[in-house]
Image 1 (cartoon, rainbow, N blue to C red):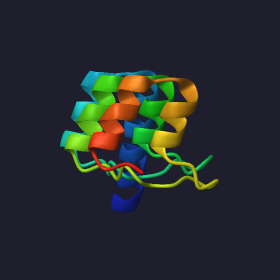
Image 2: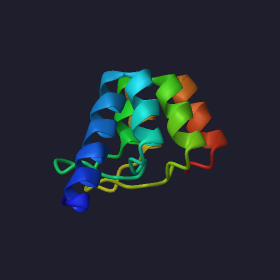
Image 3: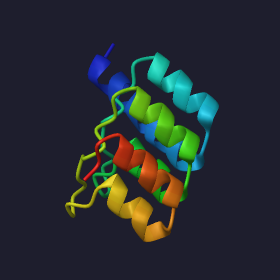
Length: 102
């Protein structure tokens, strides 16, 4: 069994669930060991960035409580805070700031 592939697939599933707002699967993939700081292959976005862009507040909170890096940068040096701000998700902006996002 190729454990690297399995972990990568699990990380991809977490990112997709965060983007889709699928709270149940986000929790399940984290429980199974998905890396909350893994980045997608397209833009270098983390699950936290996807959740912040699409306004999934509860998922943002779940990811932060599981040690997601609130200051991680994507391929263009953007952060989840920048995306949440750009999209007008004020509650998420405040959550990220309280968690130490800059």
